[in-house]
Image 1: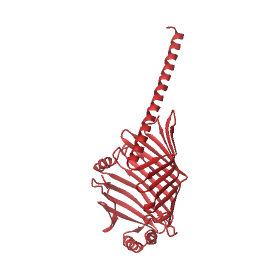
Image 2: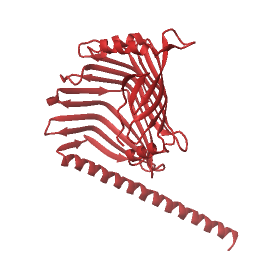
Image 3: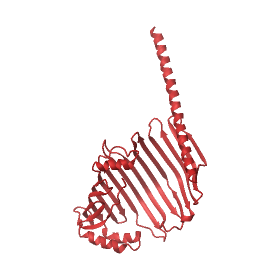
Image 4: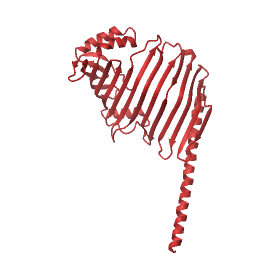
Length: 343
């Protein structure tokens, strides 16, 4: 075969290979879309079997050739037997076919929940809400979500919801592998303002959380309880890098290491650092009327174990907490309990 003929033959082979790859990718996209359609049909059927109705005013699937995009506009969920209804303006879910297991979702406001027999009527809105999930053969590996410009209004008369208006400037949650053995969770919410039914508002709130689960593995798995139980069997070391609550002029921060036992209870030590702890009784009274005196007694007892922190701002005090089988102690004084995990 002459060089010219070899080049032409090689070109034809390359073209044939490209055509085959394109055909295979089209088949892959079609198969993925069919699987998604079957899954959606099963979800809708499951709701219908339970006496509920799940509908979208407009729904569709597109994204060919690189993604599989599902959208639902005007989504509604209704339960005829108890009159509960919920509506979401829009939901878009996008799966990257070239990165299996990676799914992204965005939600369009508002979300409306109405349960007349419970006296619940809620309307939530936001400037932006997004979620990313990564999964593999070993199950859920990680997730990340953000929420900006969130507001929640309550117009019902349920005594279970003692607020009228809630605002959160920004919130996020991320989970994922920190190394080949460790897993971490980070979360925060800032600019939280809660208006009570009587029109009074709580001090602005912020929370910040950073946890590292040592030797947890790189995935939560398909059975989170089984994964937690296996982690507990290896010692269940949880490093609380920071757990901070700020309420107006008062802040409380905890850090340390806890170990999870097979019983689901934590044990270990934590360092508790506070600023403006004397303001806690007034804050507690605002949050739960009638609790101020009890919190004042607790603060008085804790103060005996607290010491000023050198070099820190005035009013900053610190103490060690001992956690034994879920019970938190300041010295010999029990302060409360950490609920057990169900393993």
